[in-house]
Image 1 (cartoon, rainbow, N blue to C red):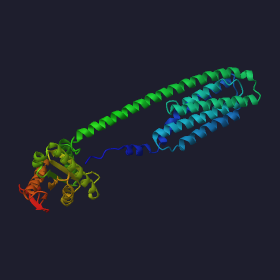
Image 2 (image 1 turned 120 degrees about the horizontal axis):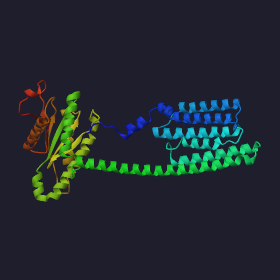
Image 3 (image 1 turned 30 degrees about the horizontal axis):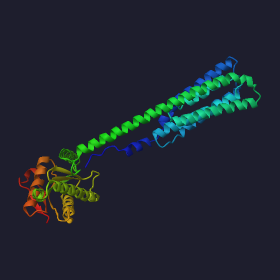
Image 4 (image 1 turned 90 degrees about the horizontal axis):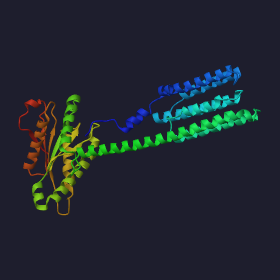
Length: 397
């Protein structure tokens, strides 16, 4: 039995939520890059260095705005991480394409072009993997080479491209350094994630060990009593009751004296395994999402907490456990049996009182011949405070 907690699947569902708002936020720095390009291109035009026909400038600006708007509107990725990387790569690809178009259409030396390719790749820096950043840098280099080829074919004198080519080499060097830095950051990030995963696994292992009895692997006394308190609080809050079953192995002290403590430990382990399997097989009748839990109270005494289960369902559970234990011997000549006491929670009852009633029912099962289940039944129509101190016991077999 455990409280419902947020699982990794819950985070995956959160990640799958629409990301239009984050897409628009991611477009803001890209708009800044384009605004810087436009400003520098306008200043270069005023200085007479690079000119672009008004019609071509208007068409280019309109195409930039429309394509980026469409990218933001149609962004339907599978998860947040995939969204950021995919959008960054798409924005960089668009920027490279429009930088290439500008390089072809503009007349003049084109000193702005290498810087445009550099800033286009910077759009994806820190937002995508080093491998994808490297591919984008190669695409930017290919775009620049294509624009130079088109300009040469259009009749631009080759010597006029030398200064621009030197700038491009510098930009490519910077891109190489950026890719290397991104790769190093990615390696450090992967190393940190691996360390965090190992720490989380270790914490989970320690937590499981702290909750479990080291021999039987059932929940230990502290955990199961805490679980009882949580179940009582839930029952008082929701009105949905629960029951408990206390199991005690019959003649366990004699078994220990006759066969030794190692065999006794083996018997405890076998009982715990059989009981857990029997309880799990009854989960189909459990009307709540909280699972049954088996814990070791101490020695050969165990307790099962049955959320959302009334006394009749608890009886079936206890009988199923009793039959699973008695059905097969532990070893060839070693047969074991178990007695059980069942009690259903009464609203407002304290946990010690609930345990006392179940323990008294267990004592009655022992007294009537062992290998039995007895129930501390609540008398209908009478408040818990009016019940007699000695519980009413119902015989099952």
